[in-house]
Length: 91
Image (cartoon, rainbow, N blue to C red; front, side, top):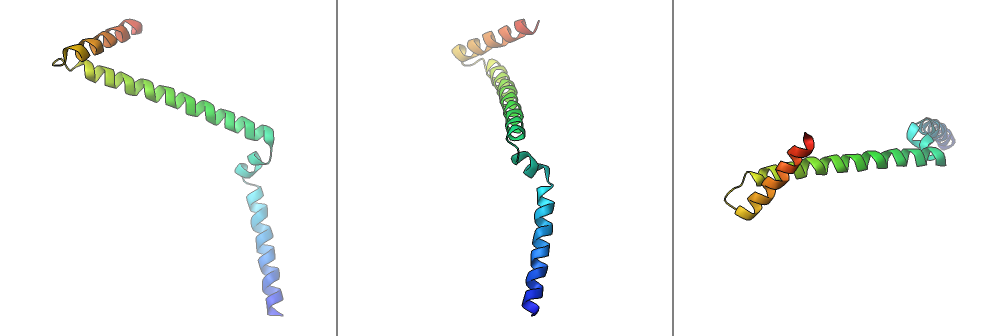
């Protein structure tokens, strides 16, 4: 008899937990195809923008640091030319 009571209590607790999970926005988004598509689209835009900005900053820093190296004439001149073009584009 106590096993039936324990099982009933566990089922009530399980129902309560499932109801709580269904109220979460993550679950509500994944229950609706348009919401899921909108979320995925916004996530993709943010990821793409972050990738482009991060790569731009990283490449700018690399080009600037290489332009500071003057003991390698070919690379130093090439990097200095890139730095000059970047400054010209900024103006």
